[in-house]
Image (tube, rainbow, N blue to C red; front, top):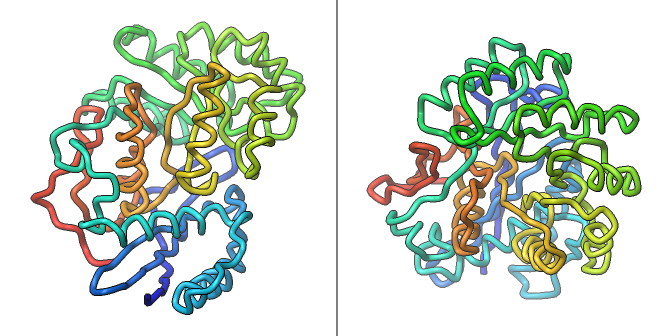
Length: 341
């Protein structure tokens, strides 16, 4: 086997705001495998300040991984390298598939079925966020997720009020993501105010590692709470179980690139379902290489509610591929070829 990697910097079409700051670009590394005339591709996607993988050392661990794969010896320990785990798992699935871009053959990969997704509204000033919402509504989305926590809270509520003034809960499903921006002492009050606007759920209202406070919020909240960043960094099954058992959220958000690939994500799903906790899948700013793999995996899990898989259109230099978004769904048009990596 031959194994190599290459760095790829994705440039945002416009600066994208989160409660952690403004993103203008992000880096991925493509893992490329070759064996007996076949190729396999995987993406190691890092988000600065969020991914556990050390960006300064990732090329060193990738070099060790490639050397081990070529020498057919024991691989380096990737426990604390979830993005690299994701890239390796995807590349191996790709290598073993008849088509390197069809990892989980299904009606989705044949272009016969589509996946419902939420439209994503990035933080910015009021007019910018409103323009994004208008665009999503006109293109057929009926589930919208808003990043909140950067504007004045009253301004964010005003934005939600204007949406609800035009669209009822039966028209538009609203999700919000605070990315841990609320302070513990006022989080419940903010949740109560948000609940006036028929919010489907809020992701990560307070920062991670405050299990007791988060558990109390989940118990007292007037609207469902979903854990997102709280799942990152827990690799042992027992630890995963303790997170869910102690906090008891309403939902968990699964981002394979941040959790350690599909294997770890499926462990979270299994534990969540045993505890009666809902879930959905979200991409984490991967290129279309990673998004394609995550979407195919999500479809074969028989998902029914909108998933968070609409990030492929954020970049000016994404890899051209058959994926497309239409009327609030992600689909595949196999008449469109994959661009070279």
